[in-house]
Image 1: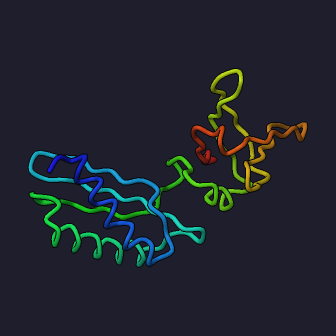
Image 2: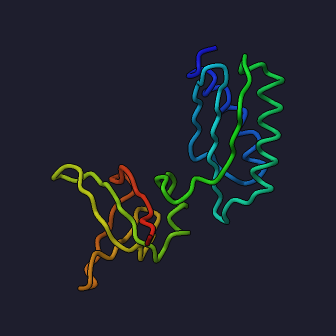
Amino acid sequence: MALHDVKSAILEIVNESVVKHSAQVIDLAVHGKQNKVLVEIFIDTEGGVHTDMCAEISRDVARMIENGNLIDRPFDLVVSSPGVDRPLTFPWQYKKHIGRRLRVKAGSDRGLQEIDGRLIGLSETGVTLELGKNNESVLIPFGAIEEAIVKVPW
C-alpha cells in the first residue's frame, strides 16, 4: 500500500480512538524510511493532552494498524500534543492561548499579510489581536486565517 493510502487508512482508525478521549487529530504524518515507517499523530483537546491519553491512543492505533495489516513493514508510532510550534488548526484551540503572542498569516484584499500581536479576544467568527503599545487592535475572521502560530518568548 502506498504511504498516501496508508495515511488515509490510519486517519480513519485514529479518529475512532481519539473520539473516545474527546480529542481531535491536529495532524498526521506518515514517513517512509529504508525498512521502517514512522507514523506521527498530533492530537489536542480543549483541556490539553496528557501522557496517559497519548499512550492509550498509541496502543489502540498500533493494534488497529497491525490487525488491519495497514503497514507491511516495521513501524514506529508517535502520538503527542502538537506543541507550540505547530499552527493552530481549529478555532477552539485559540482559547488556550488568550494573552499569548501570535503570528498570523491572513488573506485580505491586499493579499496575504503577516500580523504579530497579543491574542486578546475570541469570538465565534474570529480573533482579536492587540498590535502595539497604542492598544490598537485588529479583528481577523477565521476564514481569512491561513496560518496562526503561537510565538514563544524564548
